[in-house]
Image (tube, rainbow, N blue to C red; front, side, top):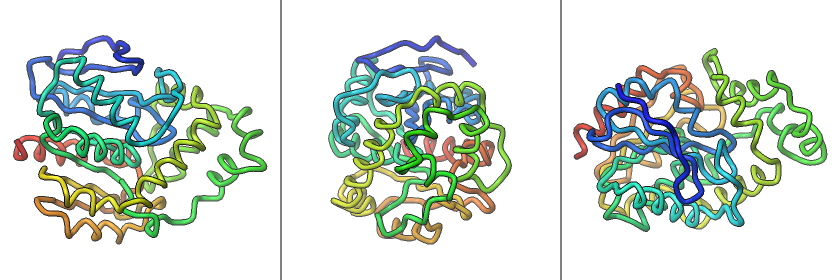
Length: 269
C-alpha cells in the first residue's frame, strides 16, 4: 500500500492513501470530526483504491469558511477533485458527510459514479433525542463553556457516546476534534438540518442516476435505525444494516464496513 503525504487543495486538507493509479474512492467525514475518523478502514480500502480523505472546512486541518451551506461545501469538494484531476469517483459519506456527498452528486453527476452513505439520517423525523452528554456539550447555556474546557477524555466521550460497541478513538482524531470551533459546529448542524428539511435524502437520491449503498448501524443512537427503510424507494440502491453497531461503523466494525465498501465499489462501476 502506497501512502502519500496530505496537502491542501483549494483550502481543504486532502490525505491520499493507496496507489494513485487505482480506482479513486473519496471519503467525506461527518460533523464534528475529520478525515481521521475513517482511519480504521483505510488500510483495507487502500489495498485496492486510491483513497482520498477530505477535511471539510472548519474541521481537522482545513481552515474555517464563510459559509457551511451543504451545497457550497459540496462545490468546494468538487473543486478539490477537479484540482486533483479525478473523474468518475466512488464517494462515501459518513453521517452528514452523506449530505455533502449527495449534494456533490446533484451538482456534478459527471464526477460521481457511485455513492455510499453511512449512518446518514434520511429526514428530520428520523432523528433521536441526543444523549445527555452531547446536549450539554453543544447546547446553551453550558455548551460554550464546556467546549472551551474539553479534556481529551471528554473529546473521546463525544465520539463514543454515539457508538454501541467499545471503540478506541484514534489520537489524531482527538487532536482534530479539539480544533473545531463551537460556533462552526453549531452552524454546520443547522445547515445540515436545513438540507434534509428542504427535501428528504431518499427523494434526492431517487432523482439521481447512480448506484447507491446505504449502511446503517442497527443500534444507532443518533438516528432511528428503522428509518433506514425510507431508502427502500431509491432505485438501484442496496441497504445494509450492521447488527450491534451504533453511529460509527468505521470505528465499531471496520472490517465489515470496509468489506461492504470494497464490494460496492467493485460492482457499481
